[in-house]
Image (cartoon, rainbow, N blue to C red):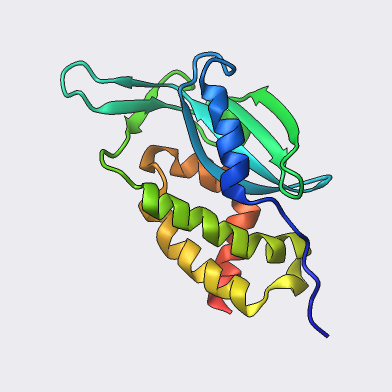
Amino acid sequence: MPKTLPALEPVARIHARYARMTRGAVPGCDLAGLPVPVPGLDGVRIAILFTATEREPQTGARRVQAPRHLVSARADTGDFVELRAITPRDLGVLQDPEAWIGELPEGDRGEKRARLLDLYDAALPAFAAGPSGATATAKRAAIEIAALFPEVAEAPLVPYYRALGKRFFAWVDRAAAS
């Protein structure tokens, strides 16, 4: 009997809806990070970290601060769940919340980012279904997520993504290895 997996909203659609919040709705933030799947009381959620960036005056590089806010939405409906201020410590990262933590890479990673979000769509129903949900499609997606995420993620924000999505990334690692 085939496994019945939950139907979820496309991650790219959820991310696009809430990434617009950087246009004034989230104080002091002008960058919406990658979406990160997280378990919630109401099922899987898509969480997005918001942070501030600025151009470094001498080099022109775009530098980034530690995340300041987190928004989450239900993965099944895309409905808003919460917007809250956060500090690095809230995510278990020992970092000065006001420190500039690194520079963002130049160049367009849009195509790879779109591929990563498509892979999330392939993997998330199995992640939401729990240990018995890992289908062959989800396993293939997990293998590609494990390889692609480091290429797409903003390096200074990776510790935050990993801390926020620790259960998802542990699932990706297990599914990719099985």
